[in-house]
Image (cartoon, rainbow, N blue to C red; front, side, top):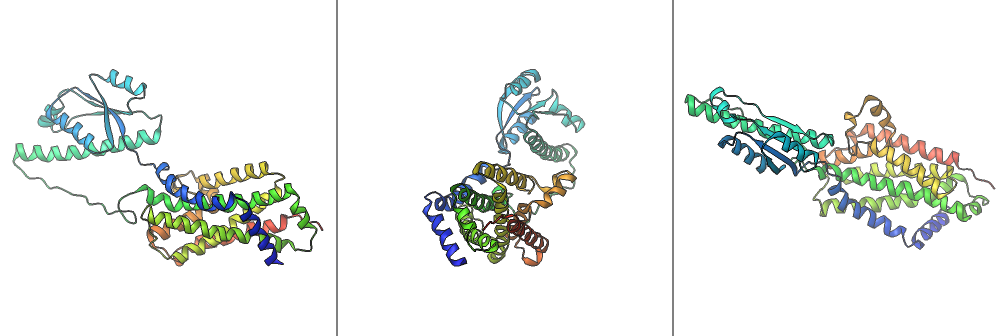
Length: 370
């Protein structure tokens, strides 16, 4: 009986001209475009410079800032009010004011003041831009201090050099961090949306009512709905792994079998969640609304964009009900750290729990008459 039901599901899937293309084109497009769009690196920050000193030191500082690659000089103003007007007209993001006697104070007193004013309407851009600028000024200050000390006092002072070692993502590329998480988002969309919409569509067409009067058990019917989407989940994952390798040069440090094992549990659980939604939705519009609501909630609580540790305590607590949180942790750990099953036991237990819960709920909530 299960074999005939699966044959019916696959035939129904491939007769639809849109769905087979969606399974291949959606992950391909998402992994090509989304890592470029979902990038939180801040570059090309518009900087307005108010240089009231016009000394070699002030010009050297401006050149150093410009050479960093993070900033571009939007304008050079004669006073702070002009620079502020450029911020208000959205031409500049940050103002750097260099006061008069900047070089003189550095040479005579070994200290000088600068003022940084940031447009914080976009808090992330304002905060990171200020941090970048402060770091550049700090480095400039260290170099000037060494130069002045050696030139005027003829003394060599100790120089402490910091060489950072970045583990797992040495180049600090945001794409490396985002690609594994975006794989999960694609899997959630395909394996959550399609099972729900498939059953609701059959409800509207009346074919599900015909199945309800047959002697097929609820468990067998639900299993026949789930198995095809496990297969499609593997296809989506394989396409994503191929794009990650050939486009982004990202190869998992861990075992691919570990990824497929955990994705199997995730797809099993999330397709079960899609069936739960379909059991309560009366039509396609209701199903899409419910799926969108829950999937978006799961995504924002998963750590896809914002680390869970940065969330308020209550949000961290609620994030534990998001299956996406655990599978994103798995893919990032396997891809970037080479983690094995023994390192992922909490995630394994959580995904097994979600799969059991959602599929049990799907079977119990399905109302079969006949």
